Image 1 (cartoon, one colour):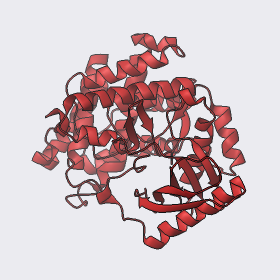
Image 2 (cartoon, rainbow, N blue to C red):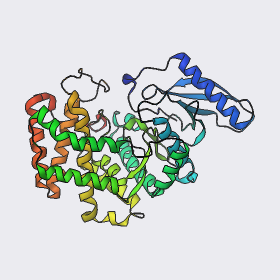
Image 3 (tube, one colour):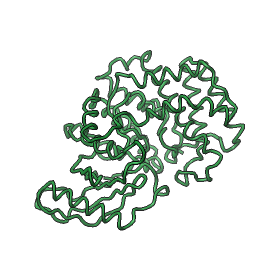
Image 4 (spheres, helix red, strand yellow):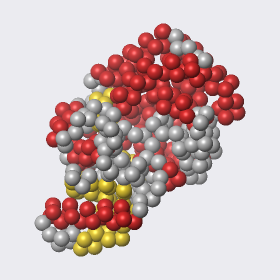
Length: 399
């Protein structure tokens, strides 16, 4: 398995030797207990981890059983507040490991231990991440990677359609109270707070019609019956490009939710992270088409543009509002590099580009009030940040 992270190496501290050793020792204990005989692991390779988690590739040095030559160990710290990413990780892997192997687009769960807050996973090898394709120099490889991601997302949705009850039951057995989509609270918070934030930060009012549209979008998002498993994060660091297609990594926010909300990540690529560049004209449309081709057998109504495109715009608006709510307060105070890879665009450029895309898609959909509001936000961002809000450059592979 490749790196299972949500940030680049510049954003994290490598695990201290003692933490790495402790994680390997805990994995040996868990595997030995599961198989009833000593299992020894060696040569840990620190893969980095989100937050204070430890992720390592290890070699299986000794076992009386038939185990792979290498495994991936992931150990979590204690939970913070009311969100426990370990619970979502474990339950997601349990749900997905139960799928037939030919339908599985994720690493298999080999073992886990709640007390040690540890999972042991199949190692998918050292295949490149999608981020490496996009930051490379081969445009065709980057395009294939993006389309493979879109197809894989659609297959993941189709194979896990309607698994709400299964996911929630597994979460209850896990002893966790956070069964809902972790992003729901943030979406509601953004819905309530963004209009005031836009006034305070940019002196932009939110028309009642736009607020009503956003509120309706949230209701559809929460009550949607088109639901399936979602990895939750869309960062290209968490997608492994293998010979069999893209494989998904990192389920710290894994949940079952509205599939169109995920599909909007193809129109607004990687809206949950700030390391995003631009894509060539038509690329997002090709990705959305690839996704629709995979889900149409389960949700045939999404083949109808009159049904699908309005929902897609609503989901896109929610992502843009959520990103603005999260990112706008830090635009003035952040250091030049912020919390992003040193070579990625400034956050204000990323944020402005998302409003620009929303304006274009709102115009195409005939939602004039959304387009006019987006115009106001764009103008305010440009007026305040000037050249810092310039056009988003393309990913290096497409330049």
